[in-house]
Length: 97
Image (cartoon, rainbow, N blue to C red; front, side, top):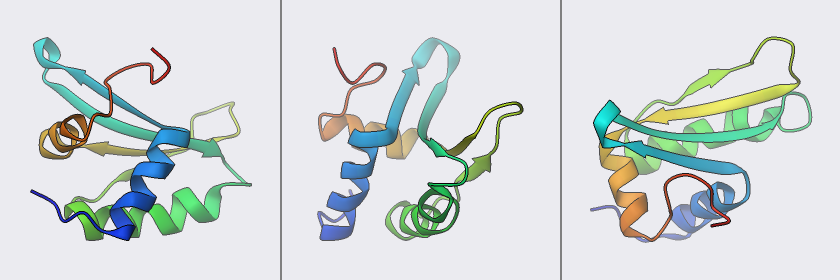
């Protein structure tokens, strides 16, 4: 499906550190979210990761700054990408379980 490259390895590493995959078939929800500090992590989640995601998966992520929080969220809504990540062994929901 997608080429196993050093860029993909980097993206998966970021996912393991700051990412979350949510899959709910009954809601038709396929979402990957990366979260960081709005100032400290802006370069990574506001500039670098969107380009990496577009290059790897040909999808444009959305960037959010939740009100009253110091958080930046990078969100990918894609069934194809979620299914690929689950094939790699990344779980839906809490990564620690």
